[in-house]
Image 1 (cartoon, helix red, strand yellow):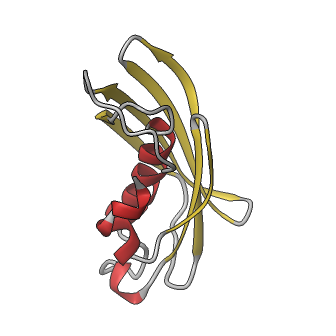
Image 2 (cartoon, one colour):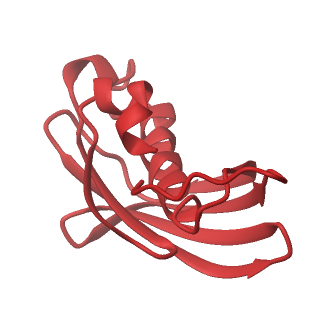
Length: 129
């Protein structure tokens, strides 16, 4: 799934690790990703977390999409920062799931994201994320 994700790949996001219900992605904040305050635009931080969430929730086989997500921005990120998003499945029930993603700069938490997933009936793509 990640190989076909043009949005993430064109931003330089890299898939570092993936497994059943987990994924770790990395992104460097570029000059085009900062806002008028010279900090990383929240949309890019969200996109990184959302991409990790997508890889984790699609790791089981059926095509799975976001049903909703929330993010808490904990600390600003700056141009040149390397951000790592680590997604972990919390639970799956029926066609739904809950996933938490921590976005870090080194050991410092930049954002915490919670995604809610929903599988699409009758679809399966058991590929690596």
